[in-house]
Image (tube, rainbow, N blue to C red; front, side):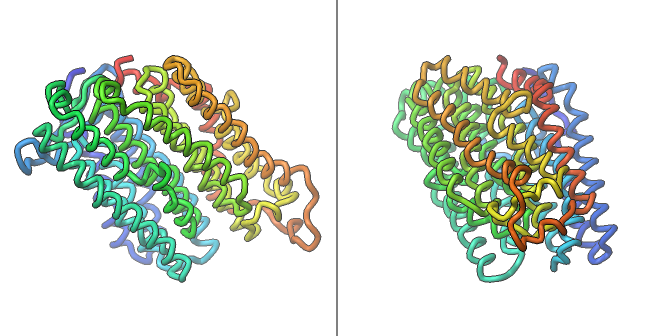
Length: 496
């Protein structure tokens, strides 16, 4: 890979940095405030796309902003992995802004300027994580996401909102301070640098000599990293995610598809593949324990999802399960499994945001959260439930929707590594996914409405909400038919 010094890598970050302040300046001029988010998202997305030809040719864009200490810098880089996350965040920001307009105005939500400001800062943090060239820079932007999503989780400012937000902060800030920060310090002490190697997935920050001389300390550093990245929602550090569902539904979509959990699994992927590398993961026996923990999370979270009647709670535990697909893939460090795991970062984003957009549209149109009360609602909201159905097929792994592609690679990666237990976990999760998603669709289209349910009075949510969820639902099919949209960047990143 050829590293190219270029300020182009900074421009998407600068755009997302300016946007929150423009939102504040717009204040209560709602049309201007919302236009800022639209324009900033579109411009950021266009700037990321400008780097695509260079990345696909095997180049890596890098720019050092300033040096803190020897081996510690504020610097940014865009390789194939970083491009995928930097591509997803602004693209979905544009669609989420349209959705936000319908949701926030329909429900006459308060503090909308604060809401849009924090939403924009969260995107800034996500783009910063995507473009971080080292552990120190990644840590700073990881924390920015945590701090500025707290007001979003607590948006309703009631007892339930503040309780959920407190748990959210205790988990995310607590784990990062107790585990992630010490992991970063240990890495610097052992390796003398925090810079990610930008040359494939075999070698990491730690040299062979360091691994041979201090194997226990390197193993401890790895455990601290995994424990510190609680945004990835591995059990037992997952409980913040269902608790954060007290937030408005667009925030839940942001948490689950665009910024927070994607920053978590992206960071885990970056730490495993660029921080430690496949060789160190295998040499120190770190691969299989991580994959087994992820497999356990997949199955248990799916079983819990089966018990939930609240649609957002069911989707929350689905997210806990689905995130671990990414971790299984990268932890196995087999070429096919890595490709499947990294593909799932993008594929899950489009499918899961469709599901949360759908849940929000259902609430705006009917004020229903209970799945048992949604009988017949699909006939009144065919576009919403149609898109919701496409996204559920992706979660289950049915072709030609994109979830099938990433699961196909993951299953073949497990076979490549001869891991029967993980293969069984992946197959069981598919059955469980069908078990908790199919009843929603069945009730919506094939059961008559409950007496006195007012379902007959319902209709589709506003167009500015339905259009984004229809587009992301169709995008899930498009990515299943044309997986090269993300796959080409993954192949360049991993040199597969």
